[in-house]
Image 1 (tube, helix red, strand yellow):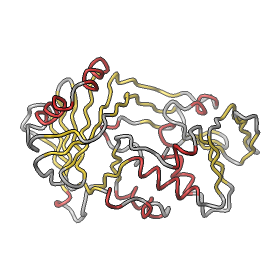
Image 2 (image 1 turned 180 degrees about the vertical axis):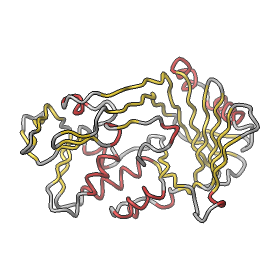
Image 3 (image 1 turned 90 degrees about the vertical axis):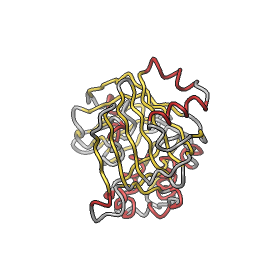
Length: 291
């Protein structure tokens, strides 16, 4: 994922040999498919990707500047409004398809001389001491290293193997995402409506296109996933008070169960947790990858 690959890329110019152990196939990480997710990058995250030499590897025509964000609470007339024009910055942040970030990171990492990626292999066991660490891989190979870093998701097996406990919260909610086109201009403004029973968000992409994110309780997820396109778009459009006019679904519908996690400690002897393995946030904050 992007957290592990970002960290690997940050080690490229150091006098280190870096091994990335990846459970997925080489094909799946060298050519990641769209997954519906748009990552909202902060200015600082963008600077880090620039420093790593990754930002220029991302198709810039797919980068959408976020100029304004409005957050609504039910039918209340009050709202939170964040606007770039109120400050000296050009945009609040930048929306980039998650799979394009992963692609750029992989291209950077795989072209490095001191970095090796092995695929379709997982960690069988890990042990560390004051003097070093040993990892036994699923193919039986033993790897000795100075440090082990785990970035294997919020359900991290390596975290568990190291005896680090975590606090998990199952929100019993599912996030449903799809791309839509709409009649009216969104003005590069994100909308988030906290309605009672569900949450509806709109992420503005280039042109009259947006990513619609619907969060519902798990028992309602199948109904929303199986709803026909026209009815789904009517529901989404009505949720934004028809401010963007009629909507048309132009992408697949994706779903993600929502579970938050916080590791009880983020490091141990010659060992560290990063990414979701350390802290898995609720996506409503839009800060998971930024953190």
